Structures are given as C-alpha cells and as structure tokens.
Length: 153
Image (cartoon, rainbow, N blue to C red; front, side, top):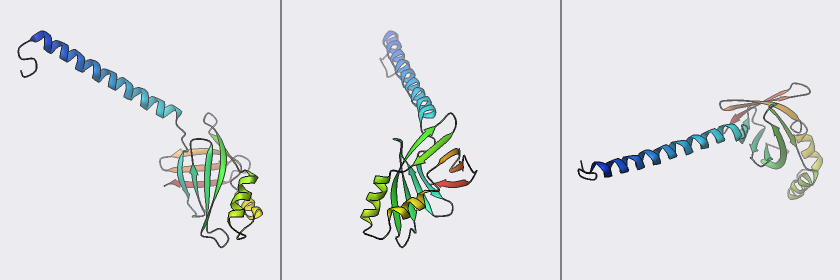
C-alpha cells in the first residue's frame, strides 16, 4: 500500500475522511436536485409558436418577452409582458403594461401604433392552463378553450 505505508491507523483516518467528504457531497447534490425539481418554474425558457407567428421568452422574475414575427411591415417586434403563475392550479396569466406598449410604439417611429400592438397582444393577454410535455408547452385559454402550442427553442 502506498497510502500511509503500513500504518493501519493512519489509513483508517484517511478512509473515514474520504467517506465523510463523499457523503457530504452526495447529500448536497441531492438537496440541490430536489430543490431545483420542486421550486423551478416549469414554463421558464424560450418557446416558439408552431405557426411561426411569435416567440415567447419567459423569465423567472415574473417577466416575459413576446417577439411578434412579421408584424406589420417590420421584421419583428419585441414587447415586454408580465405574468403570474400558479403551479398548484397549473395556470399562467399574461398581461401587458400600456406604458411599455407606448414606449415600444414610440421606438418604431410611426411604423405601428400602440393600438396595433394591443390588437396583436389581445389573444395572448389572458389566463391559461398550461401543460409542459417534454419540449412542448400547451396553453389552453380558461374561458374559451383555445389552445396555443409552443415548442422549446
């Protein structure tokens, strides 16, 4: 034996230290994984509409960005949204702020108006039940039952 030559007592201490460190490491990894599994936001990430009309980026802080593709005569328009999520009921509610819409419309320099943005976001600003299945997010509107299917980017 190369470790501690033939001193059985010293090898025993080294072995106990190795077992203690590895046990602590395993416990910390297990706690991290359990915390991540039960406290993470299941809809967080970037999602693409299957029809190619929009991209939805959901952040963990209650904010989201929707990128409207081929909007009016523009290539794309990014609009900030707010959302609230209820993980127990599996519902998510999207809403927009009029001041932020006005800011986005002002940046366009007349290419589109605040009303154009409101019209485009009317279908998204609602409460949905959500279902995440592998790389697919399905949003079902609570009131009418309309569905949006988004794929993870």
